[in-house]
Length: 392
Image (cartoon, rainbow, N blue to C red; front, side, top):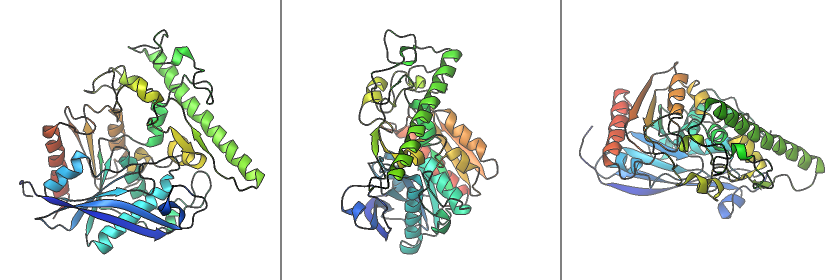
């Protein structure tokens, strides 16, 4: 593989296919006219052809402006950055439908663009999607969403990728929410009604670092309990709407205070090289109440598919145990978004397949301002793909 830097062009990708809508999930023309429109970019080196393409896809955002895809393209690799139908608005996101979107990109890569090999690059929230997709592509089992709506992945024609990477990633959106949600909230309609003993950000409260094992055990249990209270309300509301036999069959709601992980305040918990007192969204206390917090807005069906720990199927740990293709796991040691324990759990779950794991010392979540760590990530990926005959 050449070590020189290549120039590359950004080629717009627009993929569309027909799909009947039971209800409108996204605003605007693309979400209301009976077709799904997907938008992405192909980062194509100007001086190097390839039979292999790397696909970056996240359920809820776009990735073409991240440092890593550009670094890979500069190294001569062909990269597709793919937005789902819910790009930049995950309030109604259904993971099973995002898997269908990923399948459409993979078919486009092979049948239209002519690539022979496809490697999934699961960055951040994209790892659970990529491993969920690959598990279903190899052995499809899902015919309905957790809410019971028909989304038949067994008939979707999902085609298998040739390898999967997990890079700077957590194990799942539902799992991470169960570790971040603020358990001090006692009333979902009034977030000011809180248990002071479980409020990380109460200056007068007892919940301060360093946290004892007893406090952490109680805190984690209360987080799961809050998730399950919301899930119970969601299921009851779906039943109530169905019983009314009216035109309202979905509802949006706000989930207050979802960014309260003790790891951000106590570096001794799940230790790595992250800086204490900050998270990837800045100050954790501000992020906890801000509009950009995880899972802040949700529909009933999206909650079950995306955020409910007991219901969501898109889990990288489960998915890793279902695949037969090679798996690369890359942990960034100073990541303040993805817990240090998650990559190892995914790696250990994939004992049945060819797997490899690396830790990049000092790397943050985005590699921003870290050319050395970014170059190391590019080198690890290129070397792994070459060793697995995934790069021509």
